[in-house]
Each structure stands twice: as structure tokens, then as C-alpha cells.
Image (cartoon, rainbow, N blue to C red; front, side, top):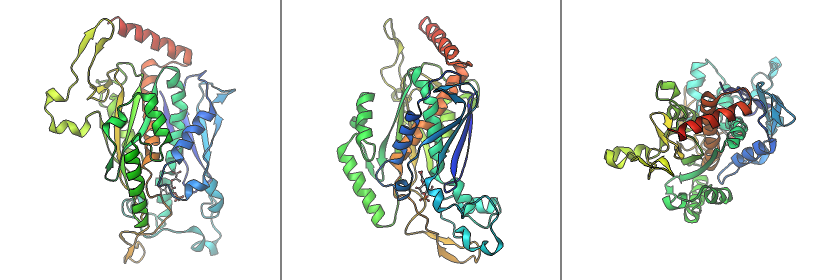
Length: 392
Ligand code: EPS
């Protein structure tokens, strides 16, 4: 069973993850994890924090001489900004006279953030204790985790790509996405907003500039495609084994994500069934196959063998430089919400985050289906299953 936990605050010393259940002998290239972290840091519309950070991972357990050992893997990403926050975020008690001045206390909750609900729930008078952990900084280490486990997936032929479909009211053309995976990747990685559509890119950059100038923020829609999945990852037999259900939970757990869809998704509502489902065909060369992939590669909670296509919607970031009305938790008086440094638009970064979060869920389902203690055992199990599928 693959599982992980993360810990760490946005302005604390580091983010930490422990991953358990990786088989032994998976070659791990730290440079590939750092490359994913670098992709996450890019994107037009990010704020000043990204100029401070240069995220790199330290592997401090479970990998030896470039290969997993089967032991729990511990990852650390240091926050460079920590040096500017070390006294504010110190784990040790403050001297009594510094109690109020030294903490950059937050007491005017930002609408849309975890500040108010978290403050009330945890009976916390300093909302910084909520903000520090609810921050999207935590996605750094989730990307590192995805980047680690996809090194096992890539040995098995699975490839993923995340890109942007919409920022604000600017939508990329379907034709720009409808390209071979390598070509789409090349375009996406070159683009400042991770789109393969130059007209949309220009309009998106203009919208981000407008939003920034007016102290506002922008959300959007991101998409991940995964190729190389066999038929039958996930299972129909129990609610918590359905792959689409798990991916939905993982995607909506990404900070600021409000929705998820597979294939046609919400577009299913307006169509008749005959224009929603993917008819089944058979020939000797292709075995069972479909001419369409409206399902987005999942039926009954299981992969169909077609590419998995997932979209997620990210709301505009809730920290506004021109803040919305809020209420001071001390005085109960109306005030503008507290302004904390933030980004105007993090949708391009969110496409990298969703890609890696989905890689994790695929890896988890992969290990449930093909699980073994070494990568050799996993590969034998995959090969045996593929032969069984071919003979069906
Ligand atoms: C974030 C606020 C900003 C972002 C941060 C997420 O951080 P800070 O308050 O330090 O300026 O830059 O994102 C990251 C640090 C990151 O690595 O993505 C928030 O409030 O969620």
C-alpha cells in the first residue's frame, strides 16, 4: 500500500514528506524531482515569493545509491524565505515581552481562505497558525512526491502532462490541445501560461496584467492527460476503490480547487446518452477499442485503456491586494481583510501540481493492482496481467 503524509508551514524551515510502500530497486533521479519543482515555480502571474525560493529536494531516507530500498522514503524541501521568518515562526516559546510584537499576528481573516473557519475551529486567536499550513506552499512537497513515484510509473510506460485550458474568461482552442503528447508537451513547456495556443496566451497575459493592476486575482481550468494506462486500474466493487473517485478527492484537495471533471464531465448534462458513451469495437489488431474517449478514460471507476483526461477548476486566489470586507476577530469591527503577499494568478503552476497529484493516485492504484516488494516483482505482475488481457 502506498501512502504519504506531509508536514511543514509556508514560512517554516522546511516541508517534509514520508512516503511508504514504494518497491525496492526503483532508480531515483533527484534531478527529475527538481525539474518538476522548477516547473511548478514558473508561470506568468506569480508573486515575489517565487523570486526568493529555488525549490530543491533532499532525500533523507529510503533511497541508497540512486535506488529505493523499500523502506519509507523521507523528502525535505527547505524554505529559503525561512531566514526572514525564523523568529516569527520559531518553535520555541517567545520571551514574554516579545509576545505581541514578534509574531506578525493575523486577526483580520481573508474571505475565501481557511483563516476564519480554521481560527474558530482551532480556537486560535492568531490566524497565522491557520494560514501557515493552509497555504499552497504545501503543494511543493506534493509535487515532489508525485515526481518521485512517477519514476516508477515511467519504467512501466506511463506518461502524464498537465496544461492550462482557461484563465479568467480566456479559453484555449480545442485544436491546440488535440495534438500528439510530445508536441503538446513541447508547446506547453515553452509557454509562460502553459498553453499551446499563442492567441490565448497573449490574451491570458493581458488579463493577468489587468487583474494585477486592479489588485485582483484570476482563476482558471487546468487539464491533465495520462497515457499508457492498462485497462482495469481502480475497481467498481467498492466506493473507495474507484479510481475517478480517488482522483476527484485528490484534485479537490489541492488548495483553491473547487471542482473536477473527467472526459466530457459537466458537458454530459446537455447531451443524450448516444452522444456521451464510447461505442465498443473489436478487431484482431486493436483488440477491444473505442473511436471516441468521451469518458476521459474511466468507466465504472476503472481505466478503459484510453488516455485518462481530468480537468480541475481553480478559484482566483483569495488574498487580494484590494481586499474584501472582513471583520476583526478582536474588536468585531468591520475592516478590510489583511493583505499578505500573494500571487495574481497561479493557474499555470496549478496545472503542474494537478499532474503530479494525479501521478500519485495512479501510482497508488498501480501498486494495489500490481503490488510487489521489488520493482522486478511489480514488472512481472504487470507483464502477467497484460498477457491475460491480450488473451481475453
Ligand atoms: C501563498 C502565498 C504566497 C505564495 C505561496 C502561496 O506565499 P507568501 O505568503 O510567502 O508570499 O507565493 O506559494 C508558494 C510559496 C509556493 O511555493 O507556491 C498562499 O497564501 O497560499
